[in-house]
Image (cartoon, rainbow, N blue to C red; front, side, top):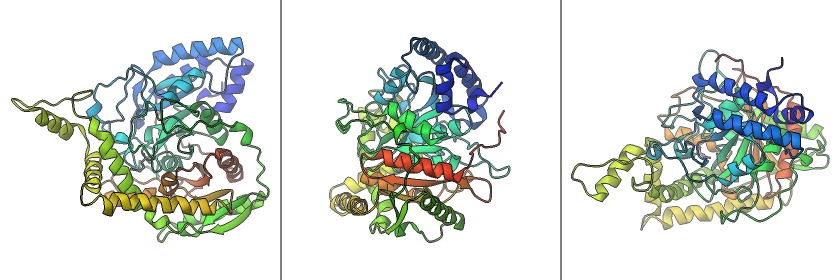
Length: 491
Ligand code: GLN
């Protein structure tokens, strides 16, 4: 029998429609795969009863002829999405025991389409990190190893990418504030897609930096990403930053035809000290697109060098404000102090409940927002953010899409960067510019490095032109001809 966990979403969709398999069979195979995946610490809560119930409903729906692309497809959900009555802590200690009273819009959209929930996925605490080492539940392992050495899956969506790369979910929801979908996708040979800011509702997603946070899928192919995005996207009056514009048919964009399309190559992304292999892969990607009939255009995004410092002011500033709500009163952890006052309780709760990286961000954020420093840091960063957005705007007058590497390195070993926040932040150098500009982007698995670890290429598009990002991504995927399958060592 074929291993059902190795199917792509598109393949499973067809087999379900033809009656070759049932959603119950597919779900059972995945529940077993999730149980066999414990060594990687990707799932922090499993929901097999919910999954089987949803699978039966999906089977009924398939019989009735009302199935959509996601009907009967088993997926994992990043712990950042509120799931009614189910563990939702953004992998923080401070949300201990929190089970939301309501469902996030994005997950509700998926369930409405008949998707099946396998469980909640590990992540960096409050999505702050690039290696999944800041989670209260401990780090996630990457299914891809460097010889016998374990590597990080990237972050913050570490559980999402690990489970999808390791056949313990057909797809997963993730979120991207400064690269948390694209960088971990690059580290695990998966496809990651971040839509335009405003395309998916943020309602019910635990907030990190609200002007940057966006939902998106992790899958094992570009087509699967398009199918999952179709379900996740859409206007939602419950999120004031969600935009009321029609959602195109993403899968229909996968025509394979990019003839005459103009692809921009930004000179500022040739970074000093970047591994040669990454530069070489980028050159390969350029050649692939050229061979497919695209025109390659050299472009400049002059403010790129300010993107990382700008992001690490804007994101912590918003985080310090968003995280003000965790005070031990409304939900989660409460640390009381014998004979203490209310502020004593707040302090004790926050001291015990937040991890080190989260505290660092709160302190940076509070500092850059405080009187006397606001103009010099926060306001300045907002102005630079506009200049970065203007760079893209000017570039997109000349080109249809932009191609860059996703990350400046392949997956690294545990502990390699966790003591050096700046080294960790540098991982985000290629992903944060598009986040600041609110643009759609993807990471496409494009090859392996000399240690056999996956590397991704990033495609960026104009606002609301996700279709072009999907189309170019699919051409790269096809040209790379690279089947991203890690050796299975965990079961
Ligand atoms: N690594 C970045 C950070 O730590 C991005 C995180 C994200 O996109 N959620 O802020």
